[in-house]
Length: 57
Image (tube, rainbow, N blue to C red; front, side, top):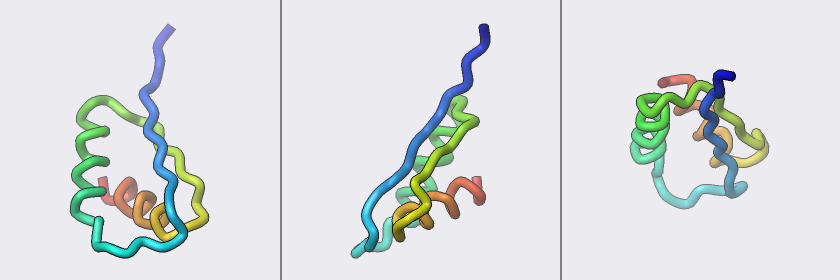
């Protein structure tokens, strides 16, 4: 049986610092480690940043 690696990202409604670069690095690292599934809550600002970083990767 083959398993897929997953990464979850969900967070705060508002993000008070620019975390885009750090988040993109983390997503690229997850992809390099074999993650192929990404889940997010899709409700707050962090979730939107997470989704954008996944799309960019």
